[in-house]
Image 1 (cartoon, rainbow, N blue to C red):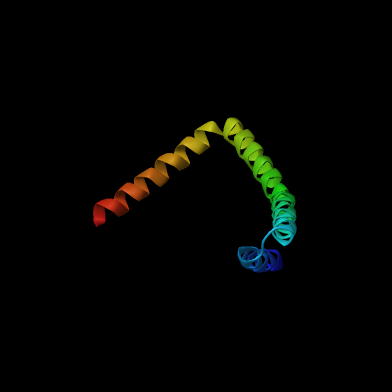
Image 2: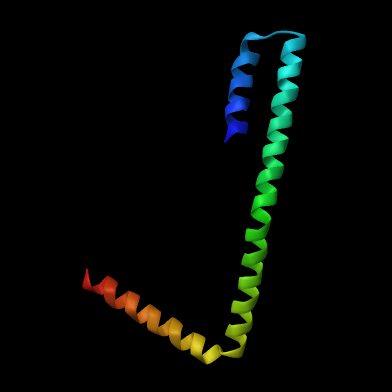
Length: 87
């Protein structure tokens, strides 16, 4: 969050700056944005990995228990249809 605050402050300062100070402010903003992008990518990677792992497990389960999965899907569809028809 402090990166966003710092970037906002630098952007405000850059609006009134000129020449060399503008170039320095722009470089600092770009550095903060790159740093924020890297932090987001690093933080999201474990989520992507876990999602891929969960999808693979679900795929294996569906292939091993196809008829059970079909039965559950039919039951869920019937329940949803029943609830929608009640409205």
